Image 1 (cartoon, rainbow, N blue to C red):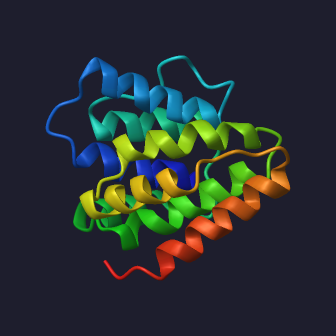
Image 2 (cartoon, rainbow, N blue to C red; image 1 turned 90 degrees about the vertical axis):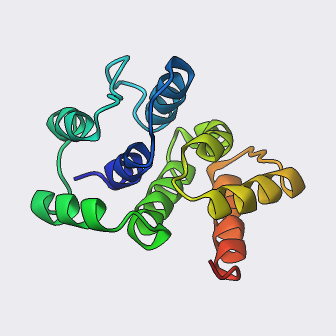
Length: 153
């Protein structure tokens, strides 16, 4: 299963209700990673979204049952953080690295952790994302990751 799904599932599980604006944010976020994805891949029911996403993209080394168990029992940064970092590093080093400047501000609306959102907002205010090359984007993600690792949640 793609690591992006772990993050999206955890994020959706923390939502009481999904507004049209939030749905648009999810879809924009997904399309930054998968430009060829169907126009509305996000679904407000996390279980439906899980099935739709799983059917659209090839699974990786993640096992379906393990992911379901993990995200239904622990929606902490320790669950979705590694998956999100994997996605950010992959995006930064890809041909779509420019999408990273769209993804990072969207995370403020999607992260299932208020403290993490506050820290990201602060980081983005002090370090606005601007990349000319994928190397720049990768360096930016490493700097963000190092900053986060210095914070105790």
